[in-house]
Image (tube, rainbow, N blue to C red; front, side, top):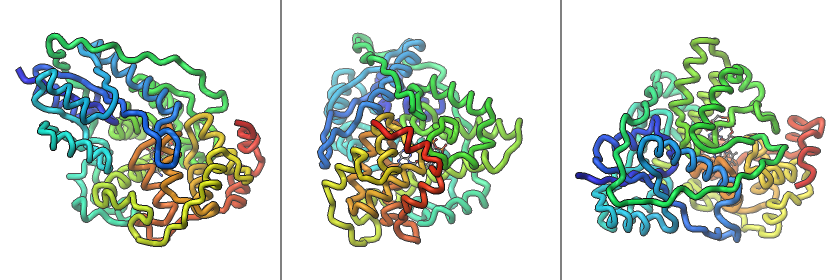
Length: 419
Ligand SMILES: Cc1cc2nc3c(=O)[nH]c(=O)nc-3n(C[C@H](O)[C@H](O)[C@H](O)COP(=O)(O)OP(=O)(O)OC[C@H]3O[C@@H](n4cnc5c(N)ncnc54)[C@H](O)[C@@H]3O)c2cc1C
């Protein structure tokens, strides 16, 4: 009898989950686990995980637990340091191996290294990108430093994602005698009526959202609307489910291709692929540069201004005096969501106008964002700060110009004129 622990990380789904599928094929007893990180205060003085993401994550875990329950299994929740708790669980259950997805970010890699140093066999599977790294025309070290070069190479070589996998035929039962407590229930909260992301976590909600997005043919208008500031339908809103892994990028692409076959492709549907390639690119950049992406000076060693804590506090509270920026910061705090354009505007303002350390802004986004994704968040901040691989240096978004272009009628500022 071989007992295996399956450690759900940012992959809270049963379908298109190669690591889980492998675990189900090799184990006779399987312990599906999720580890809640211990509560932490960041070096900038606020909790690492805020209420919006906690709520969304709880929804995703409840949905996963329901699906596992329907297949005769259960989700085991652990709290505290994942290394210690997983090691203890392995000992308690006699598990010979932990199987999980690979995450190419420093802390997540360190967790795996610590488990291995503790003598535990950990089998990590790369599965979070749309494209399989082995299908790319370059090694991870040879990844182009310019996104356009990367995208053009992928498109020229005609590289396509592999089709998504079905869910495992059978989830092996828990080891005899293991009776985990039911998944922690959460008190439902009512989303702010102004929120552009009023959705729940989990694969069931993700599937419902994807189906209606395609049914309403929204990919066709995506390119024209994606830079708007406030509407639910202006962009896909896939990111929170992608970040928690309730939905995979391959599942989205497969459905998008079927949509294009039925309703036609256009610039809008193409642009969703384009943006998902950015997501891949930032993950692959982590494989190439790892920890270097987390230095204050990033990859280029340019001077980083000293941090300005008072300006940072005003930015967080939406009290900078710059109306568009303040509206964005209030939306973020009230909902855990912010459009891509507003993320760029508020990040640029913190870095280039308030002369603050980009890593403080990235940490605040980590706390607040429902869709927090370690690779996308850090790489986007680095890009705006000008410390990443982009050849043109930092990107400053002039607030006056952005206000004229994206909120000329003042509706967005009026919507978020109060917390
Ligand atoms: C400072 C900053 C921080 C960010 N932090 C995060 C983060 O923590 N998590 C996160 O998922 N995205 C992050 N992004 C990227 C982007 O803002 C969000 O992915 C997007 O707003 C999510 O909304 P959507 O799903 O409607 O995106 P859409 O516009 O519909 O795009 C479709 C998908 O493409 C991907 N995508 C789009 N733009 C980007 C991008 N710039 N970088 C990487 N992937 C992209 C996302 O997976 C997204 O769901 C950040 C951007 C900035 C400027």
